[in-house]
Amino acid sequence: MKLYCHPISPYARKAMILARLKAIELKEITAIADGASGYTQGHNPLGKIPALEWQPQQFLFDSPVVCEYLDTISGLPILPSSGHSRFIQLWQHALGDGLSDAVYNYRYETVRPIELHWDQMIERHNTAMIAAIETLDTISDWLGTPWTFGNLAIICALDYMSYRAPHIDWQSRAPKLKSWYDGFTTDPHYQDTYAYPNEDDSKA
Image (cartoon, rainbow, N blue to C red; front, side):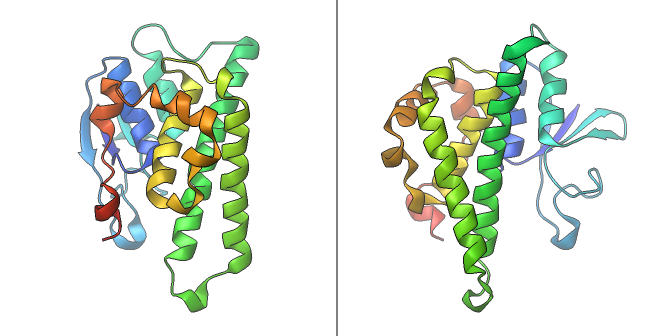
């Protein structure tokens, strides 16, 4: 199978980590944005990553679908098949993706020329990021270790936030969450997919 991805994308990185967790051999193809066509050269009509070629010339997207598929094809799934625990995991996964969404939207609102900034929308995304971090700090004891279907999305969102929205300083704002997060940073699957530049490089 081929995975069109990029580790800077929190959505694609989820799939990259999950494939490693499940020992699934994928050909990872680093996707490069191509103007209005997006990242996937037609493999995903929405132009977004990740996109998984799961059968010849057939592609799965978006990221929760790709992750759930990868979770089912090798070993015991980390997403429970039914019951309360399943929906807790899906909720946590959605919260992680929602945080990534807020970071992404904030980023692209603020890189436009300043005269085109929509201050109300910037504030909306800032509010969503802060609310998500405060919620995650409150529920940090529920997030579990090692990897779960829910916390996979949360870890990827936190790294993306550090890269694209450092002004939030989530580590200081959410000390319990930071303590939980630190337990993942030495994990080989985390390290193998971490591709964010250091602080000086990110200002380039």
